[in-house]
Image 1 (cartoon, rainbow, N blue to C red):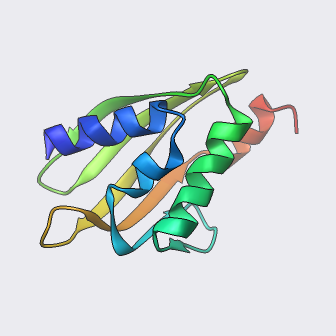
Image 2 (cartoon, helix red, strand yellow; image 1 turned 120 degrees about the horizontal axis):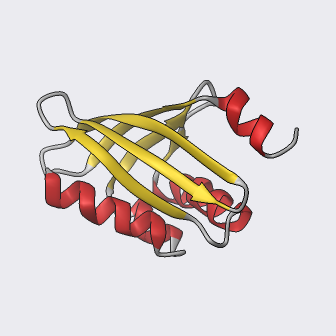
Image 3 (cartoon, helix red, strand yellow; image 1 turned 90 degrees about the vertical axis):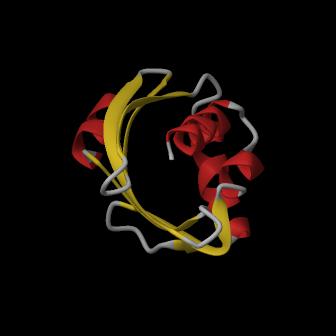
Length: 115
C-alpha cells in the first residue's frame, strides 16, 4: 500500500489529472468534504484537473499512511495555499481505489484564498 500511496502522491504532483484517475477503479469515486462524489475516472480526472488548474505549482506530500485503516494523510501546497487533510480509501480486489472520502478544513482553505 505504501508504494501505491507514493505513486498516488506523484500523480497529484504530475500536472496530469489522468494519472490521478488511473489510481481509481473504473467505477471508483472521489468525494471531497461534503461535495457530491465524482464517480468514474472521467469525473475524477475533472476534479484533479480543477486543483491542477487552480494551482499550477501544486505539490502534494504524503504526511503519513495508516495502512491498517487505509487512511492517506496529505498536505497540498500551491500558490498562497497550504492545507492538510486525509482520504479514507476503500480498495478493490485489484488494489485500486473504489471509494475515497477526502477531508480538509474548507474554511481555512477559503481564508487562504482570500474568500
